Image (cartoon, rainbow, N blue to C red; front, side, top):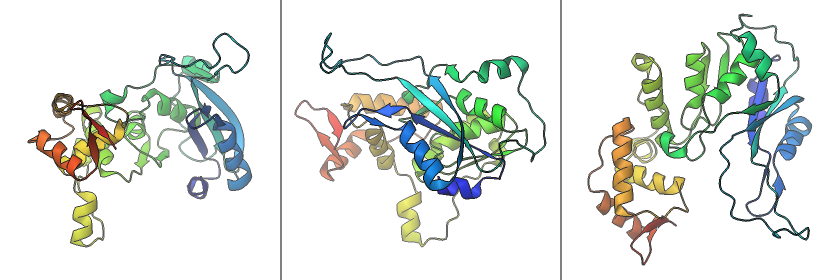
Length: 281
């Protein structure tokens, strides 16, 4: 958040997409805690909170004290887009060219948005969001030609939305696996292919560069296990996943995935169960 504050223009907006609360490891607020950090510790000014109702609520398997007031289990299946600004709420910089339609404006200034989330397996990322989410934020809070920054780029959704809505997009992502997914999405969902740089020219020695920036077939399979740590996978599951990703153009065919999985077990990176299924350790 401090980085966002220092990089933001005085009339820029900071849209923070977070869950309302969490229940893994005990009930804990998220939206309230991070809002307090942003305003009291970092220096942002609070403006509003948009509630995003994803609409695709997962099936509940725990209710706490069933039909009893002793200890009911309550969870709100919504996410928040908390909107902050740095110094001036009124935007005076940029082209002053808005592209939001009348109907969009009237609908979106109602801070309760309802549209479905994105499917994990479709995108190949454990926590994707639909293009509609950053698109709405861009059209509400920025002008055409403005620069949009996503510090946790993931599968590249923000860059896709930036390009489709005439904004300049910058994304930061430390995992080369997701960098590749983002590049593939940009090539597939926009016409930006000719301008994509495919190599990261980092001032690193050869050993470090090979270790950190070259994606091996073993890396791809291990990352899939990391993305779904609780999911039990068979040889066939991995073969089907590879087939789907190759069809989508995410990467080239992987040779001998079974051998790679056995090697990952040997290196204690994944675990083989007595049932013959594999799971991330």
